[in-house]
Amino acid sequence: MGYKVAVVGASGNVGREMLATLKERNFPISEIVALASQRTAGTEVSFGDDDLKIQDLAKYDFHGTDIVLSSAGAKVSAEFAPRAAAAGAVVIDNTSQFRMDPDVPLVVPEVNPEALADYKKKNIIANPNCSTIQMVVALKPLHDAAKIKRVVVSTYQSVSGAGKEAMDELFNQTRAIFMNGSPQPNIFKKQIAFNAIPQIDVFMDDRRTKEEWKMEVETRKILDKNIKVCASCVRIPSFIGHGEMVNVEFERELSVHDAMMLLQKAPGVQVIDLESEMEFATPVEIQGEDSVFVSRMREDTSVENGLNFWCVSDNLRKGAALNAVQIAELLIKNYLKK
Image (tube, rainbow, N blue to C red; front, side):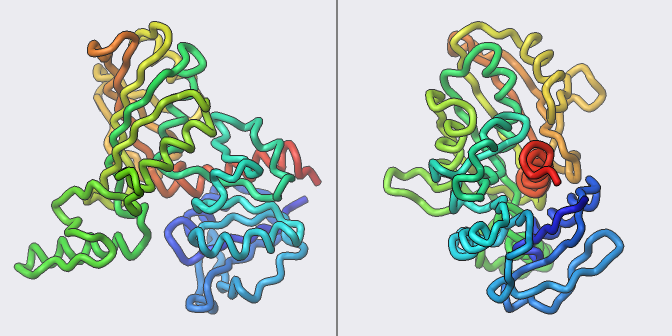
């Protein structure tokens, strides 16, 4: 039997990717509904070879809906997700609204699938931040083997993480520069074309950005509350795919060889060796791929038991849509069997 699935934020980058991923993975669907704001209601989005007419989220009745995949912004989720959950749907939310709620599981299926057992507390499951997801997928097998004490990560994040309008801004600024025009910032505070902006999300009182805080607290909730994390997040002028340079300090020795062997066996990870033809992976090369790609693994001699590695992932897929669909797959396999 199939499930009635609603996709909230269906007109956005992640919403469209959710629809594509559901179709690609042959998710058992009896009925699919595309939802968004009144502004885009009536327009159409693709679901395989079919076109779905977007319905107005504010007017939609969630009774009879089994699963909701949501990516419509934290304020929207705060309003509609409890309403959908109260109607009997399980909401898998891709926004930051519920991630740190102690009664809401924050799940990466390759890392902490057992956390799903608590979903009935609110009928809401949180999808982590895109940059957190790819990092913890790579860290999990290493943590199991040698126990991580501290992680220092610098991210290089594409503009698609800020939505379609941010992608348009990068395109328009780049075109303006090549045509001797003036690149006007709108979505970003400063020019993004041919530049790097060391701010993602708002600044907090302690001078971290909200994105940096998310990576730190989410990693601890997902992987281990005792891990110390220092994140520095930078927006770069690429369209899709996030890169991260990750420095890890362990409690016990873990060699480069052993770490790479562990990662080669880990679900959701592909390891690229320097001796291979590819040498290392870049965001452009992994667009549309489901895995987290790890390369440039090396020893950090500045600390005892330290390793460095570079990881990249498609932030719209594993960083958002794919992770949400994988959660839904686990949900129907273990908890929502019909």
